[in-house]
Length: 312
Length: 316
Image (cartoon, rainbow over all chains, first blue to last red):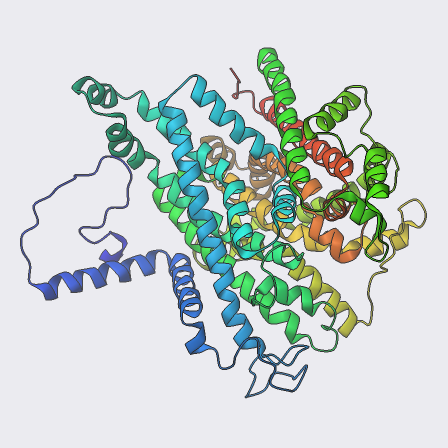
């Protein structure tokens, strides 16, 4: 057993009360950088799958942000050969209009990441806020909020998303808002439980007695205690949100052409895939890698932050 | 227990009411109306004819009155009629139900046959590469878009075997062989995520059980390892797995929209999707209500079965 099974100094993994402020003696800059590197290395060794996921997420984010720089071709221009097989010029071949599949896959990361991350952020903010508020104001507000959340939760999710998208008019923005709305109840539920438990603690009562405002109690006492489950649920939800966006676009109720999106590419590919399989293979692979990346990260995060939440 | 059951049953009513109000609200937000879907794009109607048609269909009334009319019918067991086909909604849904049900049963069976053994094996070999591999493939299964898998299976079948499933649905009673052949690929596509869920659940539950004292006792009294793992370990580990399968099964009833779409299966998801696109309110409302009801009932049954399987669990 080498010493790399024990976490390096300064890295706290366990839950529970943490020392808040520890006087850190001034160190030369080089040493702290080296220590940081050792921490990263230790984490990578300990959680190889999460590390892979994190790297994949970073690569996807880079692809999304720098798509115009990375993509070898314009994703919407039609340079000529239709259904070109993968070649040196078009690594993933060309589609039914002669567009470069690789460039479209790279640009497609934009829609997926944008919708996935924004939608879950919306769900996290709305759901987390409502869950905490419900726990803080027991009685009528709690019953009202959780009742509405339960109804939303019971509604078949995909059907709700499809119906709202059709109602409001399908677009990238609609998809983002709807997915955010549909995912909010699970955040509210996961936030309410621990928040309720904390409300029983004596230090909350003490804070009240001293005259702390509601905001202070919520921010200083409730929020830190619901952070771990919320972080885990966020990571796992981004993966399902990406999957949902792809499904929605595949059915024609999400991102609209000509914006490149993996779901739309797959839907288009269905008619031509027997002749040119590459138009169907690569967008699907991209979806799978993006979803897998967030799942890998979320799975390890859960083990580290809160093993009791295994059922998430 | 009885009070708990009654409370859960009583909760069904407001939830279903809420769901039906949301469904109704959304369906009436959809721009354009059913008349357009009914007459198609070629024909044009004079404004008077359009009004008459709207009055006949009852969509000229204020939304709340339409809702109350619909709710009143529902209380008398009448789901209304489809605005497009004029067929009773209950009848339409009952035609779609067997397709979805069969699909859900088949994929759950496949998932059990594949997922349970994988979960057990990965719990026994829990160290090193087997463990990391099991986790990785479990997560991979969760991440595989089922509609992409469906497309890949169709592609593989067509390119390699020169075979593709019939696109016209054949009911089970008419021709069982053709029906099963047709449902094989959709069931496999739907089952992959479920395999992953069952495998992960079995694995973590088995790991927990195999650490218990009574397992050590079973080993100490010299039982064969297979007997320890299967009849002492698995039997206890299965409880959370059973409940998980119940919830996933209920989820399949409403979640098969895409797969039904791809394979042209006229199930519940397909009916709902068509209803949404054609603004056929009664069909969508009836379908949503039915799926929600099924989902909540299965959840309740699962909770009761859970308490029955594991007497340590008591509900307040």
